[in-house]
Image (cartoon, rainbow, N blue to C red):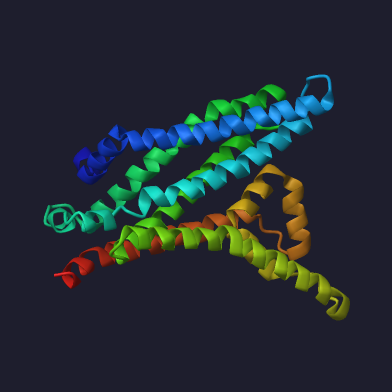
Length: 282
């Protein structure tokens, strides 16, 4: 029974990745950035109070900013781990050898993706002790932390799937990486720009047309990782978005649906194009 779920590509990639010094130097960089942020935040806020104590609302602010920072780091690191999954094999001229093994295209793509996701999960778990400092000062519930980390995992898998797809359909790792970062810029930056632009047009149109809803604002917010984290950390942000858009559906439900579709679409394209690229390159 276990042999059916055994993936040699995943096992091989996992061993190579966790034995690499570059991987653990990246983990050290990730933890160093979070440690510097937390230490600086504690020094600044306790210095402002003049008495060296933390208020619950200050602790919640640190948690919210740390959540956004960690999401930004995850989005920054993920393409470097996934964009070269297939294209690097092609550049090293080992892809044809890999495709002549008994492994199916699904096993190869999923194994490459899961090995990268496993390392990113390690990074998230390694940051948990730093997050535990928030519980010392109060203001944050464990359910918030659990939900945030689950959506971290969903976002990591989605961005990783995009990286693997571009790595499969392009011939160069640098092109796949640029394309993946371009997708992240769209999901994280351009959607935020369109959201604020839509809200501005909506507010101007209210006076002329008397409309009170803006469904496009909800759409742009529902696919933006930063908007998701803001609504998860603060219920007031979710209420404000519902008031602007007129949509009562929580953002996390739409985010879950959209990013699940992204995962399925990207993996399907990667699996179908893997062996097609091998034939076209002969």
